[in-house]
Structures are given as C-alpha cells and as structure tokens.
Image 1 (tube, rainbow, N blue to C red):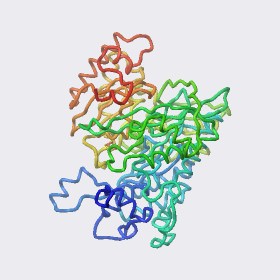
Image 2: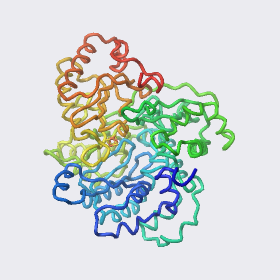
Image 3: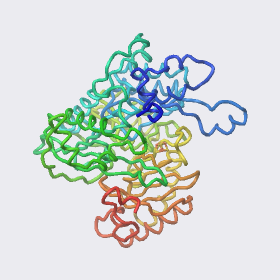
Length: 563
Ligand code: SF4
C-alpha cells in the first residue's frame, strides 16, 4: 500500500515514535486550549480525549473564539477496584481540575470531564501517583478490563478479579512515552528505539475490549466485548473459562455494513491459560483486523469475515491454544444487586445506585460528599460496577451503621425507593462534552424515567425489573443494543426506540420506531407496557414479551439486526 492509501490514523500511529508525536510540545503551547489533530489521535492512547463544551459552541463561534477546548481523562482500573485513599485522591482531582463530578463509566472506571490543557499533566500525573494509570484507557489498544463486581464476594470473585488484573497488565502498552510526557522521565526524543512486543508500531486496528463474568450474573455484559471470559465454577472452585469473541455495540446510522453483535461462545480453556488466550485473540485481531476502514475494523467484523474455524486454527497456530467444547452455563441478569449483602467472611457490602454513573452534589442530594465522608472512615475498598454503580465493600459491622448514617444525612437515594426500571438504567455521557453525540443521554434519561415511572405505577410495574438504556448516538458506549428498551439519539430531542433484548445480555434488541420525540416515546412505551401488564406470562421478561407479541422480531444473529 502506498503512503497515500494508508488511512491517516494508521499513518499517525506508525510515525508517532510509539505514541509520542508532539504531545509534549503541544501541552506547552499557550496560544490555544487545544492540541494538533495528530496529537489528538495519539492522546487517546494516553487515556484522554480533547473535547469542547458544546453548550458554548455557538456563542463562542459568534464571538469568533476557538471552541472551549477541554479534555476528558479516563483511568485504567482493571475490575474497577479502588482503595479509600485512591477514592479520596480521585475526588480531589475531580474537584480541583474538572467540571466537578466524578463519573463512573460503563467499563468500571472513572472519567473526569472539563480538564483544561494547563491542568492535563497534573491530572494524569496525579492518577499515576495513585498506583493507577490512564494508559490505554482509550485508543486502539486493549481497554480497561472488566470483571464481575466485588472481588470480596467470594474466593472465585477474588480470583477472577486477579485474572482481570493480570490480563490488563500483560496487554498494557510498553512505550516509555507515557512516563516521559506525563511523569517527566526525560527521553522524549530518542526513546523511539524501544519496541512494543505485542502491539508493534501501529497498535490495534481499533479499540479492543475484554470482560469477564461469573454466571449467573452478567453484570459486565460480557458478550458485548471483543473478547469475553465466562467463569466456569464447580463446587465453589474456579475451573476455567468459556471464551467468547466478536461482541461489540457500535453501528453507524444508514450503513448496514456496520452492526452491533453479540459474541460467539467458542470453547473452554483451563484457568491457567487465560492470559495467553487473551494475547492470542488480540494478536489475531491485530494481524487480521481491517486497517483501511475504521468503521469495519473491530474484531466482530474480522470474525464475520474469516469465520470461527479459521479463528480457532490461528489460536492453535500462533499460541498453541486449543479450545475444548464450551461448558454449560446460565446467565440470569445483567443488573447489580443493590443494598446490603453480607459476605461469607462476615463483612458487609453495600451497592449504591448512581444514576448515569454521575456522583455529584445537587439539589440537596450530596452523594459525592457522602462517599468522600465514607472514604474517610471506611477501612475496606470501593468497586465501580459495569452498570455505573458503586459497591462499598468490606464494611465491618462497626462501620455499617456509620455508613448508613452518612448516606441518610446526605439524602442519598436508596435503591428500594426507586423503580426497578431506574435501577436497571444506563446512560452514556453524551452532551455537552461528547463530540459524536446527536442528542442528550445522561442529562436527560432521569427525566424520561420520571415520566415512565408514572406509567409503571399506574400499571403495577414499579417493581418489575426492566432494563432501559439511552445513548446520544449509536456508538454504543452505554451498550444500548443490549437494553430491553433502548433510546438512541438521532437528532436533538429525537430518538430511535429499540426493543427486545434479553434481560441476560445475550440477545440484541431491534429497531421498533424511529425519530421519536418525548411525547411519542412515552405514548409508545405506555401502549407496550399496558399490554405487558395485562398479558405477560408468569416471570416473562419485557424483552421476551415484545418478541412473543411480535412487536419486533428476535435478533438471533447480528445480520438480523437490520432486517
Ligand atoms: Fe458519545 Fe455516542 Fe459514546 Fe454516547 S454512545 S458517549 S454519544 S460516542
């Protein structure tokens, strides 16, 4: 391929001297709040996106000012586990240098929005000093590795979280650029002779996502990931994992060559092989993924192109990974278990509902301050869940009442006071910061749910678990196509409504109606929910009901998503 035929991002990566580019120089340029386009692409690998406040865009344009450039910073926290000291430090960084809120993402990590260029280095260096990192939290690399929440729930959970950490460490980029740029470890020029043993010079064709789940809970939506591991436990002992490949949520409106996909479960491997298997699958995608069209570059398209037999033969050829027949397993829910639960060791664990993953102090509900106060007395851990919630883990009997008192004092919403639909809601960050968003999500979903709640109460469905997800575009950050109800932004105030995903995270939903405004969303849902309240079978989930009643067809394979 001639240089002109190579897509720009591939050239930027290739010529970046292992992700250095001119980021260090760009940070020092005080004439602009932004950085160059090439550095923007490279910065993602360091865990940050350049964004701008879209609420201010028109006004700044009128005033002939450049956009209000700001940076999003995302941490890499395998399995979402934090110490109390780390929590307090993230809280301080968010308060000092970002828009103020702490946001829990759908991949068990934090992201801070609204960081100014002059503070970017302080924030990334600050996170690095916490025995955490931001490296590879974004970019064409393996992202934050997810695992079923709460390693303190059982020895199996602990082992699985440790496996997530080992995969994360093994697949982290090795470039010295991160230390040089953010931690002043010199060698900005000349460091390019180092190698990236796994990634090479051009890294991955696109992002690569890995998650682990422990049945019967699928709280990581494991099948939405490029690579998934489903824990196989016998008599309380972790034996190994079923391996799943080719999941992914994003598609592009109007482009039927793009589609969300639920991963295929392709086989089983013993526990000891998990890191090697992760590397083998990543290497397969590195070498076979489409590098000429980023919209068709994820592993799901590679699997569709080459087929599973060839994929398995490559695992054997490159890494001697031979998969056994997949073991039987059963998922029951994608959701989190809210409230207090006592572990076998006597410690308590509290799962706190965090709407849209946003910890703030607003309207008299001071959740961010409450968790800060808890962190000051808590001697256990915190765990961020894949559903944007927070587990306060390893609480001693003595601290349980104190924590309850803090939550009450700050009027923190108790999960048992809200609808089960709200408990199972997810929203992506969307406006005002995400440059790809067509419509609101995290700022708007709570209002929509308020209105759906009225309908649910009238119909006696307030206690019925139904999952709902909203995103500002079809890129899939909030895993919308695995929601029993999904609202995906098409234009300001207009959404596509998708229905029919399973509550277990193993079947996609399908487009029901397009370009709905709020009134149309509510009237559509009212009709569907009324039918559901009157005609559902025993224990029938909403996602299954709309298929039985033929509101939408079941999507058994990604190719059926559009047809
Ligand atoms: Fe932005 Fe779209 Fe992702 Fe939402 S789903 S955060 S709008 S890219």
